[in-house]
Amino acid sequence: MTPKCPDCGRDQDECSCSNEIESLRAQITELKAENERLNKAAVILRATIKCQQHWQEERDELKRQNAELAKDAERYRWIRRLHWSDGTLTVTHPRNVHLGSTCLSLDLLDDAIDASMKGEQS
Figure 1 (cartoon, rainbow, N blue to C red):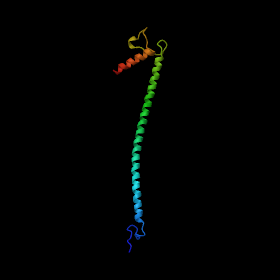
Figure 2 (cartoon, helix red, strand yellow):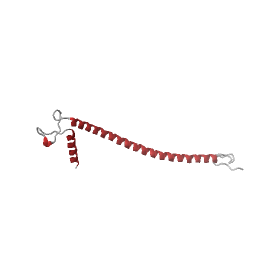
Figure 3 (cartoon, rainbow, N blue to C red):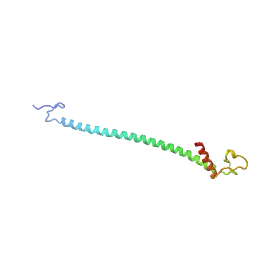
């Protein structure tokens, strides 16, 4: 009498269960390896997305700062072009605010602003 397959009950000579089981085990091994590769790829993808979000936030902040600086530069250029005799605004040093004083403009204004800025930083 031929031994019977414990899985399907057929004679072991006629049964292909062990081959199917080995094939399924091999597939499981391949699927586990693929799952591990995909999990590693997902970790890298999440890190890449987080990094991209950081750089997008950094870019947005730099754009915001650039817009502020552009507005400041626009104001500065407008003030710099003013002339004391016909402008709507005159820039002077507080100690020189009296009739006949020199009002700073163009390069003199640049130098005075630079000196004042250096004084604030120290």
